[in-house]
Image 1 (cartoon, rainbow, N blue to C red):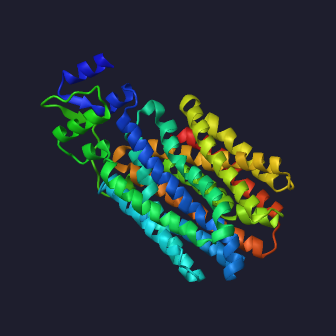
Image 2: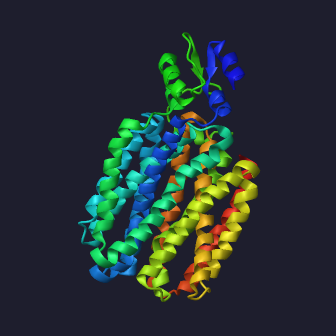
Image 3: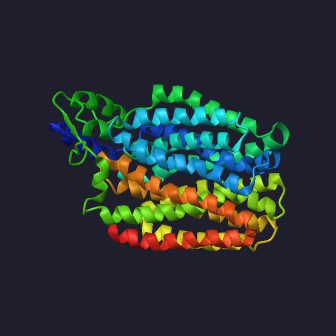
Length: 445
């Protein structure tokens, strides 16, 4: 590393991306990963909060399955709007400001949800929560990816992103302890107050992406000073000109770049896989507690089963990411999706045996939540810096269409008398389709 830095320092053009790739992970980089992971954790809590309270709301407020399906779909609709309309602002205004404002909106909307009492009020609150989430997560992914070395990109971004299932897991534990004693309102108070408090910490400690700043043409002197904090072995010298790879420049209308001939097929394939995986993911996230209750489980048992599902997503995300970095996405994610399809299908016929349900729920979490964290990295790595937030945001936005439709479809199916067995068998189909999509994606990237 010393020779690499020395030879780079001897010239005037500095490739910071090469230095980051050649250097050990610094304390500064770990700080970025931890802060972004904290955002993901609280986002995961807020995403899952409405599913935890759904059985209670149905009983206490008389909200039927169709209305609850609409409420469960409101957050994905908001995420779609935020991902497509607001997340791309990260390519124009910076990752950091869009991320901070989006996260603040998540906190405010969640806090207000604690005082909702009608279907319309829940719809509006969850819609606004989703808008904030949609603006936040693509920029969290882009910011993390742009601070970490390529050799560990999938693992480290997935490490950050596993905050989402961890947040859902902790939310399940909190729901099991709080709701039977204090009701559902404290869940949203906690999910609102904490993000607002954390926003102050982020405003103080979270940096802007160096890659973004370079693409916007910021002075090299300022970049060199901050780059030396990211990579301690780099010592700035007067006259250094910083570049990242080939020195990308910012572009107008970055969404058009997603359809350039070089990446058009990749974009469309990514959209198909994101749509399909989000459909099955949100069907399970939204209705798993209710399906388990309908299958004869107690409310606490249903929360525990959902927590195991989210724990599988957290553990699976890290394991799959470690494997993807070594063997590639096709070899790892394709069989993962196939195993997931089998696990989800078996959930419908597994009976009430706790151990079997726990294993199958864990595997289902690995193959839906865990694979999604890897897919986010695949999407981010498929686009250049100047359109990365847009590329990830639009892929997540299209995925959220599946997330919108599946909870509503689940509500209609339950209202029509579908059994838990039929619902789980239906949810298994999209995971099998994702395996096919991964094979096609490998040929286009």
